[in-house]
Structure formats: structure tokens, C-alpha cells
Length: 305
Image (cartoon, rainbow, N blue to C red):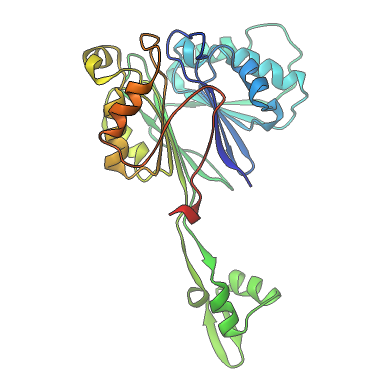
């Protein structure tokens, strides 16, 4: 199973020759979650080799154009490609009118079951084999939410412990199901032959000032995708327009124990992102990725702990 982020665009309000508007696809086992599809997302998916049939969920942080104007094309493409599986869509409830306009922005043969889930409060918004999807309200100039995917903790079998107790084959499944097994007159419990396996976490934070929700979303994330619209020298602009600087984003990652940090959503005022990297590296010593269009970023594996 694949757990990987495909970056479809890294620009903020204005795209550039090298940066498309926002767009981020998270492949998480059987899920394909598309976050904030800005203009050009459908074409970027083609360049990235991503099929519309891979999409299972849509998450919009808010309804500024660079985060949602690609939605009509993506939805039309779902129907054009004959995608019949349900696609769950999450977005701020205050923008439901905008969602409906984008959902039916043009004439097309509408066959895909796009299910709208307006989000109005913090908390869990979906559950499934992937774990839980949570939303938290951010601090932007319009209502905005960040998203967090949380996989539940589990346990993994220790092959040496299984061999020591003489457990193999169907007996392993029986022990996993019942939690206890009698073997040669001995009672073996699941804890005797397994070790804790912490669930993985992914967080998506766009367009916000620093607030408690940013830290809550980023807490212990294996992969954090977070805006770094401005450099610290322009912190006053970040505060005025409801954004983060590269230093602020990296500081959050450092304080929250983030394993892999992905900076994105760069203002057109910066021709390149080398200073974003340098600024972030001053405060974050972990795995730092400065996003580029069409980049693929794996979720760090558990064996990398």
C-alpha cells in the first residue's frame, strides 16, 4: 500500500511560470484525498500521472480562488472518466453556496456521486479503514479549516516471540482474533508476542495566522503540509493577510515533533524558495522539504523511526 503526497501546485494567490495554483493529493492506502484544488489542477494531475479514478475524498480549506477554482474541472473529469464510487467532499459550511456553484459550474453529464459534508465545528468528520479525519478552524480572513488524518495505534507481531512460543500458521490469526491462545499447556496472550505500533498522522494547514489549531493539527505529525507564504522579513504582511512565514511554520514543526515538514503556498513576490529553506532550517532540524510542482513526498515509514 502507498502513502505518498503528490504536490500538484505550490503557488499562493498568483501562479507563476514555475508554480501552479495549489493542489495536493494524498495517497493513503486505498484513499486518494485531494486537498485545495486551485486552477489547473486537472492538468497538473495529468502531468503527475494521477487518474481521477484515484480520488475518494475532496478537502477544501476555504473558498479563496487559489484553493478551489480547480474543483469544477476535477468534478467534471470524474464523470467523464466514469467514476461511480462515492467521492466525499468536505468544506467550510459557511461556503456551501460557493461549493454548489463550483459543483455545477458548467454543463456536463453528471454521473459521479459527490457527497457534500459541510464542516462547521472542530472535531472528527470521517472514519474508515484509514483511521479518522479531523478538522479544526484556522485564523484567516475568511472561515478556513485545517485537516488531520489520524491512524489508530495498533500492535505488530514479533516473529521471534511467535517462534519462541511455537505459534505459526492459522494459530496466529486465532491469537489475533481472540487475544489469547493455549499452546502446549501454556496461555499465550497477544501482548506476549506483539509490540506497540503507533498510528501515523498527516496534517494539512493552509492560509492561517498562528493559532492553537495550527499546533493541534501539527502535533506528532509524520508528514505536515503547511503554508509558508512569506519570509520573516515580511511578517507584518503575513499577519495582515492571515498567513504564516517560513520561520513560523518551521517553529511549529519543531515544537510539535513533526517528522517530515513540507513547506508550500509561496507568494509570487519571491522568485525562488532558497531563503524559505534557509529560514526554516534555522529552527527545524528534521526532514525539511520545500515543495515544488509535481514533486512526490513519501510519508515517512514506521521503520524510519
